[in-house]
Structures are given as structure tokens and as C-alpha cells.
Amino acid sequence: MAQPPSSDLSTLDARAREIFREIVEAYLTTGEPVGSRTLSKLGGMGLSAASIRNTMADLASMGLLEAPHAMAGRLPTQTGLRFFVDSLLQLGDLPPEEKREIDARIAQAGSNPQDVMGAASDLLSGLAGGAGLVVTPERDAPVRHAEIVGIGPGQALLVLVFEDNQVENRIISTPADMPPGALTEAANYLNARFKGKTLTEARAAAADALHHDRAALDQAAAKLVESGLVEWSGEDPTLGRALIVSGRGNLLRDQQAVADLERARRLFDDLEKTRELIQVLDLATVADTVRVFIGSENPLFSLSGSSLIVAPYMNGERRVVGALGVIGPTRLNYARVIPVVDYTARVVGRVLDGRGGER
Image (cartoon, rainbow, N blue to C red; front, top):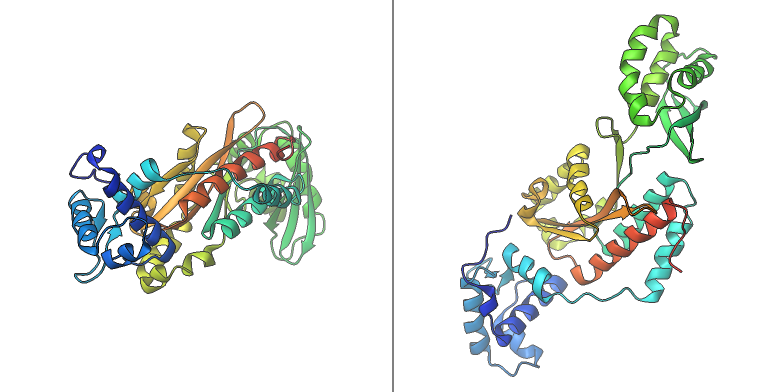
């Protein structure tokens, strides 16, 4: 977590708060250090550069500002950004046209959960300018039926139909020189062994079942079963959920990230840690509101200097079933991104629960 400032922030007078707010908003817009002359030219405060400079020095002594170079202007520290988000940030509702855009783009994905969450991840990366992250929910409905259909060399489509009438399609790898009847044999085995079980139950039983039944199964069919139940593409089998990440390229549009390639590399490495990322996004599920993690407040991204804005999405019973959010540089447009994440989470929850968009 961020270190607290060296003085009580409640003692900040109106002038200091206004100067600090102007510095942060200018930094969030440009990504550049802000100097006293720049602030004095903005007008509206009626203060000289010298007066602003004195206040900036006070803000720095409180741990809210820092100077990246001796002759540069000031930037908000992580503590300063946290104070800004918690105390000075003014959040409004999304404009109706943006709500309609989110409703429409999520609705276009149809009713397949994977498609809905993929659309949400793409949408978040586009609207927020960072990378969109979505953790899929753990499906708790039992499997009614499974089919495996060949779709090309080395690939097959596993179709799972659940008792709640939802259908999920997963692409799995197929062995080389696979016998013609292996797909049917594997599907029959899945239906005989795992029908009526949830995916979590099926995964837990799969390894033991295959150990006892491998001799009775064709080798190729056994590998298909393993691919279907144990090696889910893009999913952490120990958590039973997938992580969908869209818009990694947006992270390189930030000039500071490009200048600091090592920091960008660390962030990209962090985005490959599926299990850790899912656990981070799960932090949002302890409450029903948007959460903002700045810099080292999130241990996973502590070295990449990034911010994560995340919100849970819920089913019709108000039970949290997953989380989604945006990761980007600490100078994210918080006033815009927070409402976008919040509204998208609500829409995704309604669509996945069959309740549609906002009315």
C-alpha cells in the first residue's frame, strides 16, 4: 500500500487543494510534469507563479508531489493520486449515448457467455484506452451433453450443453494421426462419466477416472478427454475460470511507457500471469463497487507503475460471479474510466443473467 503523507491532508486549505487538483488534472491529460508558470497561465486562480511555487513546495513536503528532475515541474506521487481519487475526483454518470453504445456492443455478442465477455474486454480496451480484463465466472450448472466435432488438422470443437441451457464451445487440440472414431469415443466417454457434474466436479474427477479407464480408451480418445477437461485453453485449471485480455497494444501508446521499455516489459509479463491476475481481479468481489489500485497498492503490478480499475459483475440474485476492469498507466483518465467500468460490469451481469441491457 502507499505510504501516508507526512502531514494531515485535512489541513489543506482551499487554495492548496485547487492547485493540487489543477496539477493532477494537467498531468493526467499530458503525462508531463507541471510547472508553476504553466499553472499561473491557466488563469482562474489569480495567483502569481511565486505563490503557486510556494504551495507546490508545501504539497511536495506532504508527499503529494515529486519532481522527476531538478529543473522539471512536479508530478503527483502515488500517495497524491490516491488522495486525488479518494477526495477530489468528481464522478458523473455516463452520457446516454455512451450507455447506448455499451448496451449495443454487449448485446451484439449474443447470449454465449464467452462471446459476451470477449466483447466486454474489447469494449473496455477501446473506451478506456488501456487493456481490458475480464475474469469469466465459474459455471456451476451441471453438464447435460457433450459433443466433439473435428474442425481441421490438429483441432476439434468441444460443445458443452449445460442444464441451464447455456452452451459453451471450446477449441481443443487433437493428436496427430487420430483414428476416425476417436472423436465419437471421447464424446461418449465424457457423457458417460461426467454428465450431471459441474465443470469443477468433472475436472476434479478427470485425472482419477482417466487413470482407471485409460486401458479401455483409445490413446487418441484419452488425449481428447484430457484436453477437454484438464487443459482448457486460456483457463487456469486450478481456478476453473478464464482470463480474457484485450488491447495490450494500447499500453504502448503511452509515451512514458514507450520511453521506459523495461517498465512496459514488466507490465506485459504481469499480464501473462493468469492465475495471479485472476486473484487480483477477485479482490473486487469482496464489495459491490468499483475498486482502484494505484501503483504498488497492487503487488502484481508494483514494478510496472500501473493502475487497475476493477468492478464485480453479478447475477440476478446479486451474487458476484466474476470481475472485469482496465489496466493502464497511472495517468488513466479516472473520471472517465471508473464510470465506464462500473456500467459495463452492470450490463454484463444483466446480459449473462438473461435480463438484457438498461431500460
